[in-house]
Image (tube, rainbow, N blue to C red):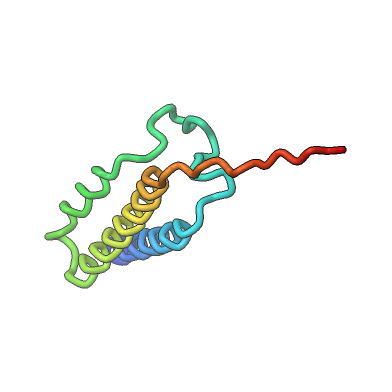
Length: 111
């Protein structure tokens, strides 16, 4: 029989690793910008999942897990939110860039 605390700790570590990978990947956009691989997900729902379920799980576990595990969960959620913030900051910075002026073109006569 598996230990529920060990399972929860494994899940928290996996979430933390995923958040760290997302934060590392957010420094450079993919080759086609922030375009998703497919125009719509297979389930037909939104392209970005709702995080309210994850936050509700964190609130539920707050009083039922050991303090060390709760701290790891808090750290993982913090890393995830930092990764999301960096993605938003990058997107906002791209939207706020002033339009570049067209390059000056010089007409060269050909004899």
